[in-house]
Length: 431
Image 1 (cartoon, rainbow, N blue to C red):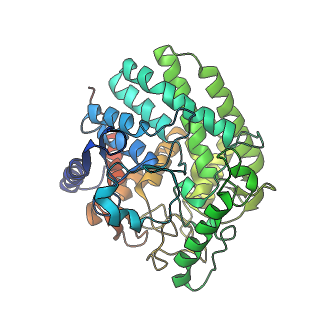
Image 2 (image 1 turned 180 degrees about the horizontal axis):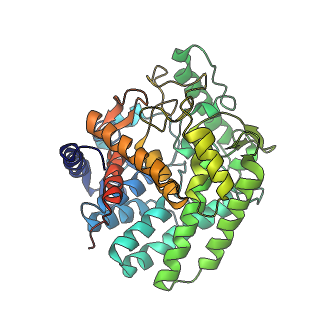
């Protein structure tokens, strides 16, 4: 690792401080449920988010594996018996009224959780916890709820049965205001000051359209229906991980998970891969129209080990390492620098329109390594670690300067601990 040792140790110390400082514990007003989790940011995001907790659990493996398990146990208290898993749980709702107002608009399915899903990172998180701890009892304890979540995604969010799950509003991808959703959400290109108001208007329009419909009926309305490449890559990756841990701890069902995964991957390649452009495009609407916007999502199938080597090479050489698109001084920007919507300075006051996010770099780092691009992975890790060393544990970063933006002490950025350990050849501590 070429980042100065003193800088690396400072990053590690800062990450440990954030993980400890963001911890929330207590008894919720929701049926007296106990909660113990690490929130994304105490001042900006004090609640518990589904994919945040999965990333945070992986970071916690480098601090205390028991806390990693607790993080996942806590978030899974939000999983309903039918398998629906909300993207946001409001454990301290009354204590954070101002913070709740700042994350509007949201749609609630219950006074204490939302009616929105999020990318199912949890399968990868459970696999990593098991690899670090070999705690088969923990895996057996959480698997029933997690299996129901993935059954629900298959049954409710794949209405055309092609293997790709759909999201029904932008927040469900976790990518909120990504420009790839602009056409579907009636977001004008200019001026930047209109982006956020237009997004909010469209979100309320969607919520009104879904009113009175069951969760099973909502995707059928075709108001906003995206088969998102990043979401489905994460879905397929978690299906792989869950099948692996099922086999490892002797739980039935691995074959079903593997079959769903194979179907999803086949559909990603058949429907989303564009040989001419060398990119994977999201699909919009029942007609599955390709959305040709260069965001980092086009790269996400790199996390799939069975991806054809020639496709992986095109993604890396044509796009990731393209200095006009994604290989900026502090990659990987959420939108290619060649796109008119590229907004690294956050002028639109909305997220995922240019800045670099550590969770994206983390996923792509491991994808690059499994496809043999070790040198590229090493350089991506080096720049990521340097970025956090320069700017601190921020929500996102300017890909040109490395300047920190958004919330401070943002917990999933502590995934940099996993990159540091990987580059050092270390493993998370066993429980």
